[in-house]
Image (cartoon, rainbow, N blue to C red; front, side, top):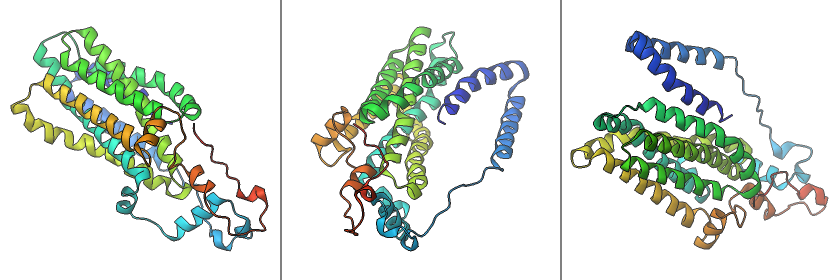
Length: 310
C-alpha cells in the first residue's frame, strides 16, 4: 500500500516542472485540481468492510482467544485520542513521526531556497525524484525483513539515513551532493513510514488501529505544518545550511528517544532497537499474559494468531 506514495512523489516533480516550463503555473494548478477530483471520484465507491460484533454475546465468548477478550474489553471502553497518546505504546512512535515531519518540513520549505542561493544547475525536482526512487526501491526489502528481524533496526536505519542526508545538505554545493542527499532521504522515508505504521499496527487492537495510525501519522503532518512557521523566523540569524544542520540535530534527537524510550526500560529499548528482543508493547505480548477466565477452555482457545517479532 505504501509503495503508491513514493511513486506519485517521484513522478510529480518531473511532470510538474515540465508543465510549469511549457504552459506556466496556471495550468499546473489546474492539473492538481483535476487529480484531486479524480482521487475523490475513485474514493467514493470505497466501502468499509469491517463489521463489529458484541463478543460478550457470542456463542464462543467463553472460549474466545485472549486477543478477542482484549478486543471486547476495548470495544466497551473506547478511548479518546488524548488518553491513547499518553500510553507508552504510542507516545514514542508519535514523537518520532512528529520529529520526522519537522525534518521533512524543513526540507520542503528551504531546499529550493538553498539551491537558488548557490546558483547551481540543479533543480529541487531532481532531488525529490531521486528520493522517491530510493524510497520505492527500499520498501519491499524493509517490509519483508522487518517482519523477520524486528521493527527496531529499521527505525534506527531510517533515522540514521535522515541524519546523514541533512548533514550532506548542510555542506552540499554540487549536483552529486544534492542527489546523494536525496537518495539518503528517500531511504530514510522508505524505511521509517512503513516500519512505524507496522509498529503501531503491532501495538494496536484490530478495532482501534485506525485511531492509532491516524494519531501517529497526524504527528507527522503536524511536524510538516509547523516547520515553516517555526524555522522561517529563524532564517534571520541562521543560513540555509545551518537550518539543515538543525534538521540533522532533530534527527539525532529522534534517534536518542527511540533508543532509550521505545520500551519499558532503557535496556529493553536498546535491545529492541538492535533487533535482539521482541516488542513488549505488541498485542502478542499482551495476549500472552492475559488471564483465561474459563478454566475448561481447551489449550487451543488460549492461542493467538498475531506473530511475535524478533
